[in-house]
Length: 118
Image (cartoon, rainbow, N blue to C red):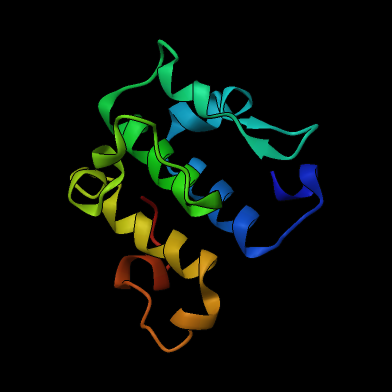
């Protein structure tokens, strides 16, 4: 995806890493990101293919992109809600990608540093 958009800044790295966590979000990336205008498509959260976990993943990725929260449902973008799923361990890597200047000294999780599959 980063090759497609020709931008590898921390916003894009974190967003596309997060979107790559789930097969469903990878398959439906065009409902979540506008490649022409280089912006997120929050309306994609309401698509029929979404599950509870993929909604959490999208809220997380959208929030990393530009601080987005769903109006009237802001509580669902809180860490308490977002990290309550199987994707949570991978969210930390997305945070490292988005905020490299603050995360340089943090150890990578063992399952990521050893190159193991999800």
